[in-house]
Length: 123
Image 1 (cartoon, rainbow, N blue to C red):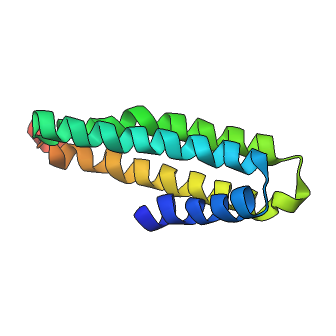
Image 2: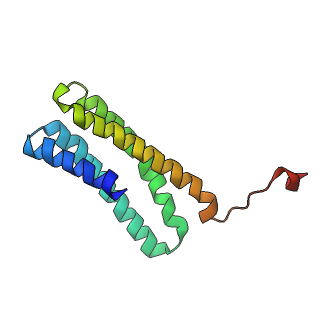
Image 3: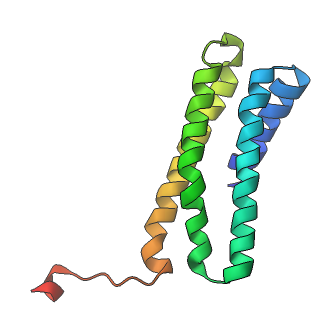
């Protein structure tokens, strides 16, 4: 996730936002990194304070907001045809974070050691 969720958006922000001076790219990706930084800080603090698997709950707070944030970024950049590659990156990031969210959710039963009962156990 570091490569896909941090490095690629950082390169796009540096190229289109800083190098070519597009303020809308700086706005979209700047806030993306602020929220991502807050998530990382929250996960770190939660893990240090609680020292158990409860810290896996932190992404469930931030990821739905990130989905909305990336979608809003797409609508903000939609009017600029020269930012086609940045829009492709935002779509890619949206898919990556949704897949990451699905994988995280699928790991919850294992992390919390929830028992799975089959139909034969219920009867």
